[in-house]
Image (cartoon, rainbow, N blue to C red):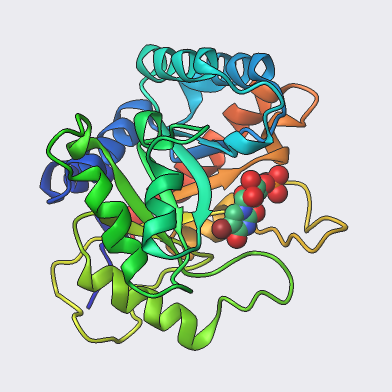
Amino acid sequence: MASKSQIPYEVRGRDHPNPLARRLFQIAAEKQSNVVVSADVTTTQELLDLADKLGPYMVVLKTHIDILSDFSSETIAGLQSLSQKHNFLIFEDRKFVDIGNTVQKQYHGGALQISQWAHIVNATMLPGPGIIDALAQVASAPDFPHAAHRGLLILAEMTSKGSLATGKYTELSVEMARKYRGFVLGFVATRSLADVDTAGKAEDEDFVLFTTGVNLASKGDALGQQYQTPESAIAGGADFIISGRGIYAAPDPVEAARQYQSAGWNAYLQRVRK
Ligand code: 5BU
């Protein structure tokens, strides 16, 4: 199957069967951005300040909400209002990995109320497909008000050195995504997985690919992170590039966000023009 990566965002935003994927592509086309900012800061004030300053340049804000030292209902209200103000979606990088009964409680309710405010979450396939059923059940419950605006990314690969999310694991992740097309929007991976052959492969499938570990200036960190540039990520099939320290730890995060936006957008234009 040819990947959909050469089709412009506005076309995918019109034709995609999943309402949340349509929104993602529409926002990308409107803002001329494919940047996801990974806002790995540790206080609500810093998180909301970053989201407000960088909101105009990004499509998605990625959070690790459990690293905040002062999470509260004000964090949720602030994120929701900035998501509306600047038209971005929120992706909680929770990496669910447990039996269905536990992940339901971690996703819905609990201390962090993730299902209330995160449009997108992710999960690993280590526990087997029950994890998708469990999360999908929460998002499609009759009394859950956000059903059309929730989706899951499957963690098919990781960027860290020596990652075990390779080979058969990655293949089975793709197979699971194909089986649960709908609630599963796509993948977090370092390259396109469209050519991975598995049961359930369909001509018209359009999984969204988020690629993390993107940095313009660095090759990695002292703890095993490995980076690629926006150009290489987009040329490799990424629809959205995720950058954390490359943006928020830059001397001028707004200037950095603009740089990543322009690098990512130019690489995308080259890809769709080919
Ligand atoms: P960085 O500062 O750009 O290195 O941050 C990368 C972010 O993406 C950080 O929040 C990680 O937890 C996250 N991440 C990653 O780096 N690699 C992966 O394979 C996955 C997530 Br999945």
